[in-house]
Image (cartoon, rainbow, N blue to C red; front, side, top):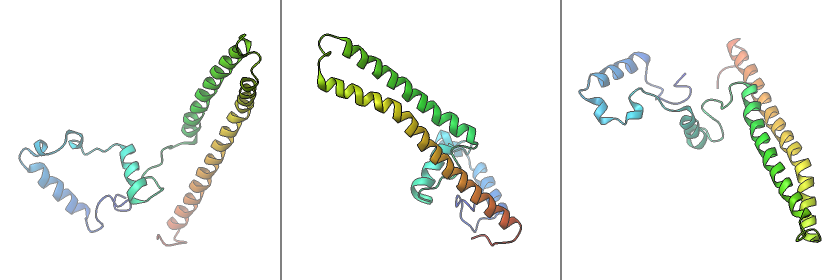
Length: 160
């Protein structure tokens, strides 16, 4: 699997990998020559995803960011909720501005207020629709990958 993701060279076998690790661990004071974050052989998934997205396979991640659709919707709609709270704050400030003596007869402030009011109605629906389109893309992409994997397992198509 690691060879499929090009994390190690293709010619490395499991036994040669184990031999390499064994030799490295027998090296005296090896940890003194390594950065602390590599002592346990771990790399954060977010960094690995960035490496793959930018250099290895541009536009594709090593591992998907959202393992379940519920996580996708939970995370993205939390941003939408935060955006809605900010819009409500701005609408309240605009309403306060309209009620003041200084801005009550300002045509430009009225136009800005009306425009933002329309945006506050249409904007969240537009964002929700965009999130639905992103979900639809992920769903179709995952479905196609599932069918391809099924066909490879059944020997209908060759890997490639």
